Image (tube, rainbow, N blue to C red):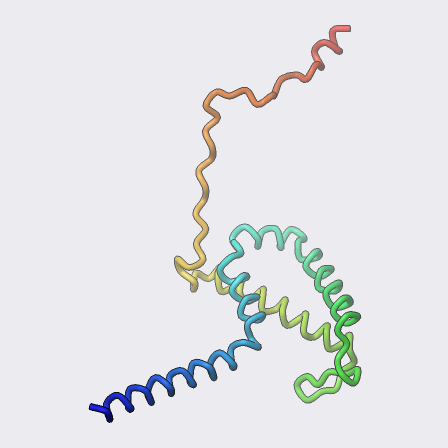
Length: 150
């Protein structure tokens, strides 16, 4: 009976160690996972895509450029250069590459959601419009009729 208890303790200890290793592996990737989850499951791309096509992409590009400038100023890399894909690039070029990768991932999440691959996980049902119930919401002439009469 004591061997069974010792084996159970060993299994629980191994599971705890496995959980700690998994948490250690996932923790550095948490911001990227959150970024992807937001653009894949929280953004309604069926409403966002028409806005992007009408010129919203200009705002996204400008925000990306500001992200690059601010990130490059407040967090320069150690040694002043980044090592990306075997290349040594300067601070702002490296930050531009990172921001571009984030924006590309955002757009890929949009295309995956628009393809229907997310199913019900990314469904955004339309809210029913509120009923007026005959309330007057102050849509009168605001005194313009009196001014026009003078």
